[in-house]
Image (cartoon, rainbow, N blue to C red):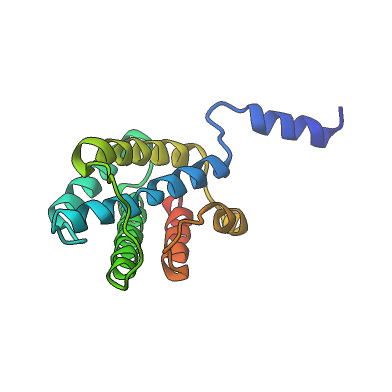
Length: 168
């Protein structure tokens, strides 16, 4: 085996190593729930912004960050970027529906069905982030993986910057 092959094998076999693509996939999956969240909020006459819920999410992220050996402050900034992106996506969908686009039928319940999945994915994201530091060179892979409809380029960039900053 060449030295390069041994190095690559060791890197992929190292305990705790996970490809950033898994992390990016989890972020995309979490954001993909925002259309359902928007539909539930619209159906139940709830605003997109829910500051008390945001506080709960950010506090949980801080605690989980510490458990995973990450900077609570940097993780909070990244999770705030996720929350901001989620609100932008929800607003985009609601605007589309108000302009006549068909709204989804049979919307899952936010509290019973969606929120547990969002919590699971948030924990997965933190675990993967602890295992997979994101570097500036990962931007193309991130852009290719995080493709949720209604996600603006600004929100995508803020998410990526937040990921890179977590390990600084």
